[in-house]
Image (cartoon, rainbow, N blue to C red; front, side, top):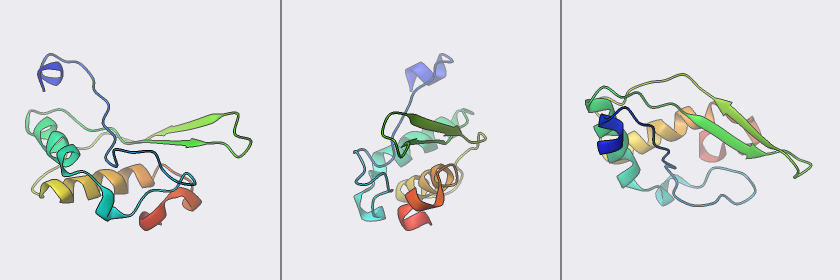
Length: 101
């Protein structure tokens, strides 16, 4: 939070682990701490930017898709994680969206 308050940038991964077959994991595996971090960032006026990252089929390239900034408002920490993942899933190809397809 100190880095954000000082105008810095941080990267958080809502799932907190590497995916299997490039697909988003089941919601039950998400980490509420990531939601709390996003909620605190939003509370101090820092937007969250969703970034979808996946490996190309040739396994030699990584694709990165950046979405628009948003803030988390009025949800629980796990609700915030769900919102984060919905926004990230929107940046991924359909076949990688897992439970958010």
